[in-house]
Image (cartoon, rainbow, N blue to C red; front, side, top):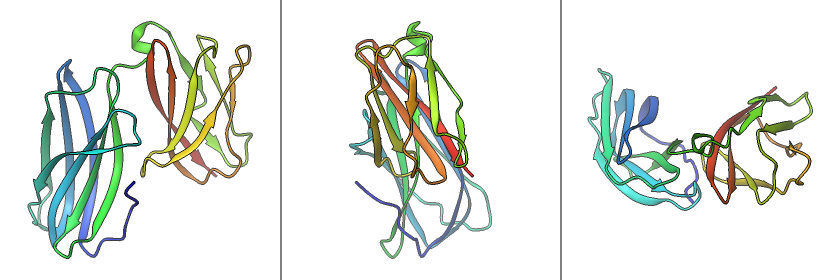
Length: 194
C-alpha cells in the first residue's frame, strides 16, 4: 500500500471528486491551483478500497500561474462501489498521495434504507455510531483511513444491537466506513475531530 510522502514539488490540490454520469461512465475531476516541478498524476482504481491497480496516468500541466483542471472518464466502473485514488509525482520522482473518491451503487440504493448517526464524532465524546434500518445479521463493518486507504478496524456487531463502538485512539481526520452484507456494499464517510 502506498503511503503519503512529502513532495518537493510545489503543488496545491484544490479538489479531487467524481460522479456517476451513467451506469457505465464515471467522471473524475481534479483541480490544482499551483504546480511547480510537476511531472504527472496517477489515478488508481479498486473494488475494495484496499487493493489498488493502476488506472491512468495524466501528464501535469506544470503551470503555476493558473488553475489547472483535469478530467478523466472510466467507462468500466465496478458494478458495486469503485474507489479511485489520486497521486502526483514530481520531476524528482517523489510521489504524494491525495484522497480516495468512492463512486457506485450503495446498499441504501438497493432499498435497504440503511443510515447511520452521527457522521461527525469528537475525541471528547463516546466514539459510537448507530446504524438504522436493518439488523447486523451477516454484516461486515470495516473502517479505513480516507486518505491512505489503510485498514483501521473491523467491527463484528451483534444481531440485536446496531451500535458500533469505534477505537478510542482514532486520530482526527476522515475515515471510510464500509458496510457489507449479502445484498451489497455501502461506504460512507466519518469525520473525527476534537
